[in-house]
Amino acid sequence: MQKTTFQHDFHKFDSGLRLVTIPMLATKTATVFVLVGTGSKYETKDINGISHFLEHMMFKGTTKRPGKLEIARELDSIGAQYNAFTGKEYTGYYAKASVEKLDTIIDVVFDIFLNSRLEEDDIKTEKGVIVEEINMYKDDPPRHVGDLIEELLYGDQPAGWNIAGEKEIVTNLRREQFVHYFNSHYVAENTIVAVAGNVNPEEVKNKVADYFKNIRHGKSIGKLVVKESQSEAKLLINFKETDQSHFILAFRAFDMFDERRYALAVLSKVLGGGMSSRLFSEVRDKRGLAYYVGSETSPYTDSGYLSIRAGVNNEKVFEAIKVILEEVNKVKSNSITEKELQQAKDNAEGSMALGLEHSDGVAMNYADSVLFHNKVLTPEEELDKIKRVTLEEVHNVAKEIFDDKKMNLALIGPFKDKEEFEKILIPLEVPLTG
Image (cartoon, rainbow, N blue to C red):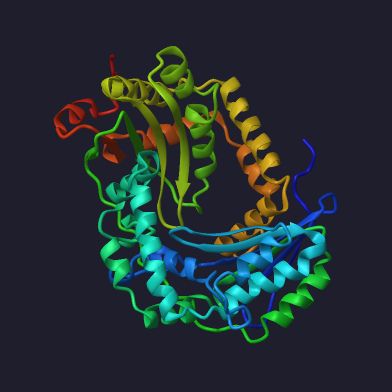
């Protein structure tokens, strides 16, 4: 495979602000991305949802662009793609446009980060928007079951709370809470800027230095360490009159700093990483139990898990779960072949190449590594770790995590009785039958 790694320039300013610039000479676009090391895990219960709410507010006007629609109109007028997102451990803002419009997107994105006004009237109006967003997610079972599995895994601690928050908390948030959170989290020491595209690193560095010369400062505010405790399989059933049942079967695993995460990634791809995966073949192709089925890993800074998700016919939900557990048991019993191992590695290599075709994917990939590792971990370095994974390492990981004491099932569907589900969540050491 051709090298996916780009030459990059990493610079840390005296303020603590970190900048990574990635020239991509073959593209005609540029992406400006600002990533902040804060999210819902950094909240207390009384402000749960404020990280996400603040992300909304950043587009409502700045001292330079006070009108509610000025930011959107300016970016729309140059055909830019732009958005923001909030996770449990980060919040990001970006704009992507023709490289000829680099100065414009730099000015807008940095203006948002540095000078948002957070007006009282705008906060009041946006509360209604946030409430409707929460309602929308709860009306979307494939999306909402993802919130439920983390609630089941982590309980009443920040890691288990909803990123968007609860409606009652959100509607009671006050302007001074936004201002305090903005000023204490959106600081130089907690911020990464990534610029990717057909750009000159030295010019970018000079522009960033000029824009951020008066950036806010402050010590990075820590978060509560995730507490995990489990002695038996756990279950959460959310009753909803649906035509299809949606569930996630999750197994506690490793955080993002654990070297075993590479073997876990390979294991996940073998199980449910595509249309030729074990789960897709058994659950969809052979039995017609689901339209979507797959697996993925979710590594955080201090916890992680492997999840298997599916949407199935309500009458076939028990059969589907049993089949999935049978496949899990097969993997645990050393059934992965060398051919599957190589296919999983090739899949990872191909997926990485596709993800790095565009400037936005590159900017986000590099910024992510700087935020969590305080250095650039190139995609090629990460891929090399995956390529080195052995069959023994994958089997060892499977034996470690596929344990009933680490198993969790969250499900949304027209079910009220947990007993039938509890019967099928039996210890994984016992061979399962249909």
